[in-house]
Length: 78
View 1 (tube, rainbow, N blue to C red):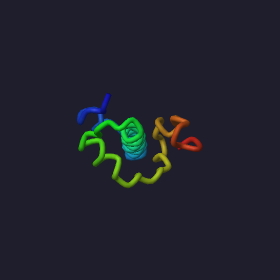
View 2 (cartoon, one colour; view 1 turned 90 degrees about the vertical axis):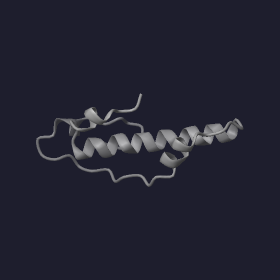
View 3 (cartoon, rainbow, N blue to C red; view 1 turned 180 degrees about the horizontal axis):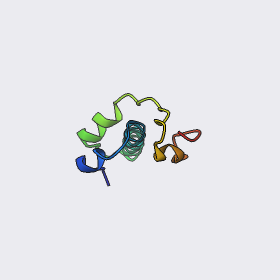
View 4 (cartoon, rainbow, N blue to C red; view 1 turned 135 degrees about the horizontal axis):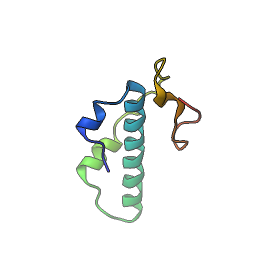
């Protein structure tokens, strides 16, 4: 489920980039699977998949989110 505008307002810059990175990678995976299965890919998914990945940022001091990571696209804790 996509993150809503209100949920984004409460997140740090490092967490925002992490979420955006995950969504881009998900769109790329969906576009690849759709191509292999000969299915049409929605324009919105193709546009997101074409985006450049944001950098992995170190968290700001005192940012509790920095101790978490997903393990799928982040090689180590942020």
